[in-house]
Length: 382
Image (tube, rainbow, N blue to C red; front, side, top):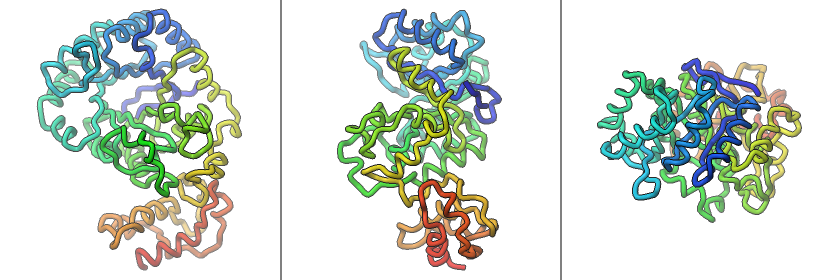
């Protein structure tokens, strides 16, 4: 198992982490078996957003003897009401639910207190300008939580969080299917049967901007929904028309800028071991490029993913950045002012391209980079 630092926090965690959502309504023995398997294989990071009382108690009991070896993400705003999970900002419900979490986990300090599931701008603004964030700040000042995090599926919210120095960790849904989309205010939009009917291809530049910003600002980035709810693992349900392996999905997530760790949701030790194959997998087993490039649907062939494998440029151009700014601007009637300014401030822009073509053989997705540079010159000028 390899380990990475969580942004500027200095906390070191395993690249593969344990997402415990499938332990709901399962006996303690299942939780203990999975926790022991995690420990034996070097996993030291767990996320628990679930409010169901037993799953919290079972995880707390299983981790108790080795608590010092675990880094825990726990969620604030996830509550249990009338026998079911409810996300709420009602402080009369939020506070006792979080106190219940701490009691059932048998801990005095939580490593990361996560502001739970923020996908709408109105919700984000209400949280950041009201009693919810005051409570979170109080928890941190008292030492009840060591760091503040936030979970979202919406890149607009992610960008706001990554720009907020109070938010030290962002938990975000990353996989090659979701990465084709821009802003969505509801996770259910990704699951619609017709969601992938449009001409989608490659990573959405807004999402790449988010990953870059997290890396630049030192905001820790952890991954949820890495398998798109299991849809990517089956030919029939994959929006690409071809299945990816757990190893390929994990590699995709860990290759994105700023990412420290991916939470894998598993029901059994056997499923966990399928994900842990990543640790010893060869480069060819990890490679997802050929699968996505040759996919019968939504192929990434010829589409820039801003991966940077085309570098170095003989003229010093940041090719991935020029591509990203071009993609951000090309579908507008006029180039957005902010995008134009960013392009203008590049040390070397598309006009420096000498059409040598040395970058093109290095591109894993066979992008015609020289043509993009010419198009960028026409779009941005000079």
